[in-house]
Length: 281
Image 1 (cartoon, one colour):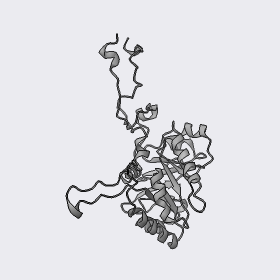
Image 2: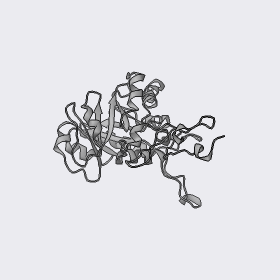
Image 3: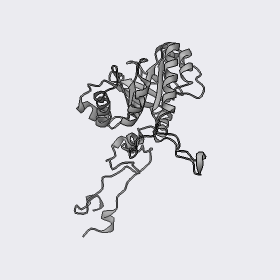
Image 4: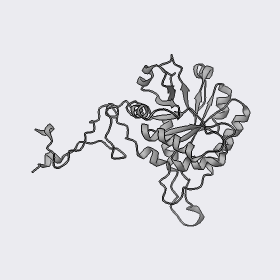
C-alpha cells in the first residue's frame, strides 16, 4: 500500500495535461510582449457587468495582425494598424523609433543576435543555431508547409515560441489550406502565424480566427499595402463572436505548457498508484 509520500507529486502550473519538456523547467522559453498580446487578443474582452446596452457582449476573440517592412518610414505607417512590426533588411540594422510598437527583426543566416529593445526575432532553419540562445527576444521559426512531421516534432524541443509559415494562401482560402497550416502547429505544439498577400480577401480572416490560427502577417512594400493593412485591422476589430461552443483562439495557447522561470522546481511525471516511486526510496 502506497504512503501519502508516494502519492505526492511535484508540479508546476501547466495549462494542459502535457509532460513538461526540460527547456521550460530550465527557463529557456521566454514569453515576449508579442506572445502576451496574442494571448490577450485570442481571449477577447469579457462583457461588462450591467444591464441594457451598457453591458454588451464584450470584444470578440481575434487574431494578431503583424506587418513586415524594409523601410523605417513604411514600418512607422504600418505600426498605426498592426499589433507588431517586423523590420527586414536595412530597416532591421538601422534601428529607429517606433514609439510604443512591439518590434521584431528577421535575422539573416549569419546573424545570431538582435539589437537592444527587440521583442522577437524571426529565424529560419538555415539560421545560426546560436540565435536560439538569445534570452532577451522571443524566437519565431519560419517553416514551409511541406516540413516533414518528424522535423516538426523536433521543433517542439526547441526554445521557439511560434511558427511563421512561408507560403501564403493561394487565391481563396480553402479548407485544405487551413489544414496545412494547422498541421504545422499541431505537430510542433506551437501557435501558427500565416502570411498574407495584399489581394487576400479580408472577409476570410474570420475563418482563420475560427480555425485557431494565432496571427497573420502582411508584407508592406508601399503606401497601398498600408491601406490594405488598415482594412485588415478594421475587419479584425469588427469580428463577430465565434459560434456558440467554440473556445476561440485561446485554445491554441491553452494547449501549450506554461513557461517556467529559472529557479522553479522542474515538473515531474505523475507516478501511478500501482507503481512505486523509486525516487522516494
